[in-house]
Structures are given as structure tokens and as C-alpha cells.
Amino acid sequence: MLYPLIFSPIFKERIWGGRELERLYAKKIPAGQPIGEAWEISDRPGDASVIANGPLAGKDLRWLMENHAAEILGDAKPAAAGRFPLLCKILDAREKLSLQVHPPASKAADLKGEPKTEMWYIADAAPGASLYVGLQHGVTRGEFERKITDGSVADCFHRIPVKAGDTMFLPSGRVHAIGDGLVIFEIQQNSDTTYRVFDWNRTGLDGRPRELHIAQSLASIDFNDFEPKLVPANYIQSGSFKFRHLVQDPLFHVQEMVFENGGSLTLSGQYLRIIAATQGTATIADDRSGIFVQLKPGDFCLIPASLKGVEIKARPRTTCLCVEAN
Image (cartoon, rainbow, N blue to C red; front, side, top):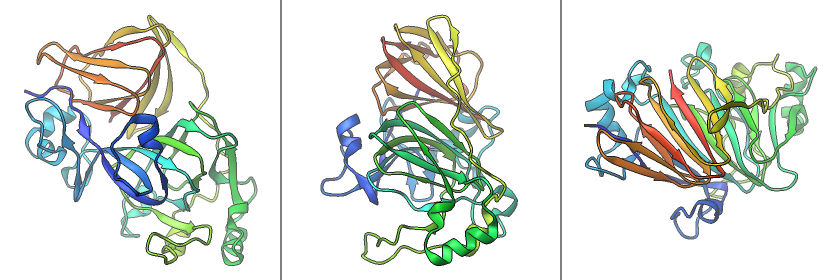
């Protein structure tokens, strides 16, 4: 019998990372390393998330997909090779990430990569923090290529100041970079293909410049994608909470749910869902299995599609992301 599942995060050292995941979310990150990513729910080769609660503790998401895929997914479609369709992360960017792009589905196979559509939810932002997303209006491919050559390609990117709670959707093909001073919840396709355009002339953890992928990037970039906007903050009141749609895409849907005075919600329908707490405290209750999962900020819970009547009980001033895979 399946139940609401939590997993042990997989930490990734990154040249641009830091220690904010420890400070903000009390995550037990490796000592002395700049940790840039916590992979909270992953079914990547060599990086399968291990279950941390209940009778299945110790087994991993790869095992679940091999033995219980129909119960986990419901009507959701698996990724390539029968893998879990999403990859959920928390990013800690103490320095800027590279200017980069992910290949669109129409070109990924030819480029020997995987398509990657994603969204960013800003959980914490230093004063003046920014994203670089899309192109400045009117930038042409020819101008972009010339500025790659002279080292000024960052001038082509659309820069957007951001604060906590802001959200950006990034379909594959949209050039982007995360600025410094940001902690971000990232929901994405199960993919790990990134093509770097520019890396701020810095060296990697090994002391060498990191590889750039100019030809692949130019083949992937949508050169008609000018100055995209953040997701609007249009909330809808529903009983004890309010919500807004962050992403409605063929790959996944994401809502932000805000329980200002606390409250509860019974999840209707049987869908593969992931609940992530960004602030406050929520309990995921499954009466059938008798298993209850308490979520604090930075925690993720996978709710298999086979479960019925799962309830979210939130304390006051709690905000959660609700992700549905399609």
C-alpha cells in the first residue's frame, strides 16, 4: 500500500552555491562545500531519491517506478525510459549562474540532449536580486552572436528584479540565468541538459573554465522570445485559503496556496501531486494508510495518484506549492 512519501535530499556542490539551505531550512548539507542544489525528488540515472518515511523507507524512486508506476502516475505520462516525469529542486545561488538555455523538444534529439521546461518560485531574495530571462526587445541572432564573440552577450538578456513569491515560467528554448542572492524552488521536466552560452569568465571547481556550448545554444534559443514577464499575482479565494495558478502547461500544473489563517483542504480527484512547503507548517494526512507527514519550509511530499481523500492541514501563515504532473 502506497502513502504520502517524503525523500532524503540529494545535495549538489556548485561553484555558485552556498550555505543558505542550511540556514533557511535546517538541511544537513555537507560541511565545507558550496551547495547549490538540493534535489528533493529525483529519478535521474545515479541520482534516485531515497524514501525517508513509512514502511518503504530505504527504497528509492527508481524502485517505485519499476514496481508501482501505475499507482504513482495515474494518468500522468512517464519521462523517457519509464522514469518519473518531474525533477524538483531547491537552488541556492550565491553567485550568478551561467547564461544558458535548454533544448526544445523539436531539437533535443538532434542535439543529443533532453528537452527541459521548468519554473522558478523565488523563496528568498537579497535586496536588488534579479533574474536574466529572455532577450531584450529587438535583439537579433546576428547581434547575439557578435556579443558572444566580444564577451558582452549578457547585454542581450532581459533583466528582471525579483522578490520572494515571484514566479517565472521557462519553456525550453528560453535563454536565462539566475542572479546572485536567490533561493529558488524549481519544478522541471526530468532532464539535466543545459547548454551554456556565457559563464562570466570564471573558473569551475577544478580551477578551469567550464565548457560552453555555443553551437547547441544557438540551435536551441528562441530568438523571438522578448522580455517575458513574471507570473501575475492574481489570487482566487477558496474557503480557508487563496490560490493562484503559476503554471498551466501540458507537462505540469503548479498552484501556490496561501493559508493566511490556517485551514484544511481535501484533495479531490486522483492525480500525481507534489506538495512543497515554502513557509509555515502543513500536515499531509492519509487516513487510509494512517500515515501523516508534517511539512516545514523546504520539505516536499509526493502523493501517489492512487490515493483518495488526502487532506492538507495548514497552520496560519503557511504557503505551499501544489504540483500536478500531466
